[in-house]
Structure formats: structure tokens, C-alpha cells
Image 1 (cartoon, rainbow, N blue to C red):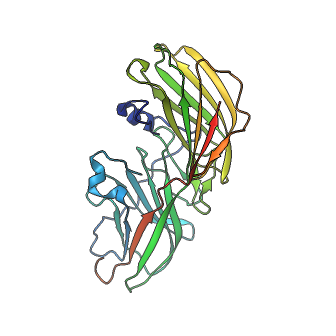
Image 2 (image 1 turned 135 degrees about the horizontal axis):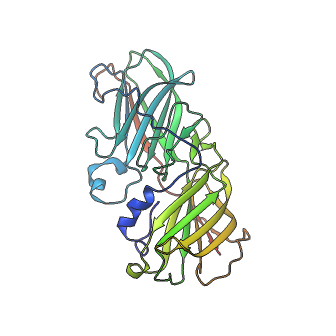
Length: 308
């Protein structure tokens, strides 16, 4: 999750990224990692994108900060490498595999933990840490003794709901909770869709005395289909966790690889739910290595604009 420059301070972004959760239980998945730059590797996966180069690590916009590589055969995971942007070899994973046909999964996101990747049918993110904008590739490869180069593109699987508050936030508001259903916190790599009916909750700490309107909150989910309808409950709390105001919006449309900007007067506006109407503004190595050059489509396809 992120906020615009005109909304919450950057320190709240880190808090927001750690507080996304889903209802299902999940576990870490750090097994079966090969060392990068393994001299005996016959498969190298390399991400090529400006989000991974050193210049973007100094604070400029990045599309992701964590990479997960997994190789499967007959539905079983046989190799995996997990990396964060602080790793020396971030963006390149070396593996040793027997000759044969495999399925490769590459996952790019900014969560604070690795998802469970035991099976490609259910890539599940830990519910205690978070879920963010996510990109992936899944496809077949054939490993042989001959060097090969494959260009692979990562595609976004998430939809963003950007919740915008236009009116003044009361000074006693200290946190905002966003609870929504209709999307998924888990990915089916076979089709790039959500595979779990998640109850997703995001808690964000705020201080209206140090921020200016409009207040902007970015929420992510993986739709089960290209288009999804979210039911969203937004609650504002004071420092004692007493509810100041709570409003529910039903049928808020989101689409994969699109931003839904959902704006209105939250504290002084009507409490009626969204009726679904709105306007759309569309806008290398030794010869024994196999090298896969991976790029990414990181541009959002368009924006859906709605008011509440």
C-alpha cells in the first residue's frame, strides 16, 4: 500500500505495508534454496527491470523490493530462491537442475515476508505481514546441456483500490481500518487469478494535524476474474480505538492492472453505499548455463474514477 505525496507521510507507508492481512493461515517458504552464482548451476533466472537497478534503491519509485523464484516439476516444487533488494545478487537466481521439462514461477512484490509457494495452484501470502502490488510469470522451460536465452515478462496480477477522502479529517482520528471482501490474498499461478475468498484488513495509523487533504489510501487485491466487486467497510478510530465513524460501500468495481479511484466526503458525506455507477477514465555466463532475461509490464492500464 502507498499514499500520495499530498496525503500520509512516508513513515506511514512502511506501517501500512506491514499491516495487510487475510483470513487464512499461512506459513513461510524458505526451503530448497541454491546459492546464487553456483559454479555448477545450469539454470540462471535474471530479472531485467529498472526497479532492480541501484539508482532506484536510493528512494526513487520501485515496483517491488522482494523476488521469489520457484521451479516445479509435475506439480512439485524442486528448487526455490528468495531475495530482497538488500541482497548482493538481487535480481539473479542460479539453480542446478537435471535435464528435463520444468515450470518456472517468478514473483515480484514488496511484502515483508515470502509467500508459501509449495504448489503453483495456491501462492499464499502470510496474513500477519502484508500484501502489495504483485507481478508474476509462470511457464514451461526445458533444461538441457546447451545454453539457452528466454525473454520472460512479468505481468501485474493485482488491482488497486485508491480510497480518497476529500473533506477535513477530525483532529482526534488516529487510525483508519479498511476491511474488504470480494478479492483474494492468494494467487493461482496457472491462470494468474485469485484463488481464495479472502477477508482483507488494512490498518493505517494517521495524524490529521500533520497531513493535508485529500487523504489517500491504496489497497491491493487479486481479483478472481478480470473484474471484481469489493464490499468495503471503512472505520475511523481515536487513540483509544473508539469508533468515530464507520461507513460501508458495496459493489466497488476493481479490475486487474487498473486503479479504481474512489473519492468523496467521508466524514461529512452521505452514508449511502456506492451504487456501482461512475465514470471510466481509461486512459551469461558459462556455456553450461541457461539464462532467462525477465522484464516486466509495470504501467497501469487505466484508471476507473468513482465517487461515494
